[in-house]
Length: 401
Image (cartoon, rainbow, N blue to C red):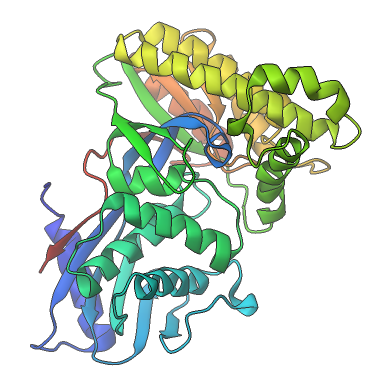
């Protein structure tokens, strides 16, 4: 297991003691959960599809210690403090779309698994900025899950367990029908080829590939468009795909073949929207592209990977339609893609990243052009908007301080 950042841990412990008071009887843990980048598979996970995803070198980090009460007190840098009484763990309507809902949801599932939730205090910091496209919510959920795992369950739960619990917390407590990719990548670490074909299960295979060795950097540009009011837009994607699936007699698109979908498409039109049908077309196209990109990475064929990623980006823009919100004059993500295309030409590739609708664009940039590319993006979107990311190979972990 990798060593933890002692400087960050020391600073958090000092903040913890200043906030909650030091105590010799406490057992302190330093917990870390990385953000993720979606290498391949845009909005396929929630339909039983496959993806390639990787943990990155940005993380939620925190110091946790039990407090011998029935209350969780969580203080996070730059955010309002949270206080949750463990007497009531059912979902609450007044907590939808809040971090408090995620804390309550994770705690409830530990109780369901036979563990006894107990109060703790926590001080957190994060380099996974909200709205940065690195899935700060998943990193936060996995951070909480790992902390509860070591505090309440002696660390017996596997990373896959924590990811499944995090997804359910999002669905039932937070109110967002998300897939499993983000939580799985944060929990397991490294570059992983995930399959979500079996409901309630995570199948993964590590992908041994080094982008830097292949001559490329992973660059992500945060375009500065907030996601706070876009939950409905995100939710519409899986909901519309499921509506198509229902018209085909199944729950999710991954349960029916592309051939059957295309044969039934004329009958479906009119029962679901044209946009829903386009999003289904994207799902099947992206599924093929994921498989092809896995093979390209396994064969160390970076040029094929780049060209296949270009096709994936086009599919997200045209068929999935998650680059911008209809009727919004702010086209930040589309502008970022346009600038990327003009800067990189055919030498690299860019695409919408993650959930979409603003947020972040991803680019695979030749190493010798990284400085030029980042300067071009930063001139438009602000200093440090474009950053280079490395792979975090360890996933979530905890250390006793």
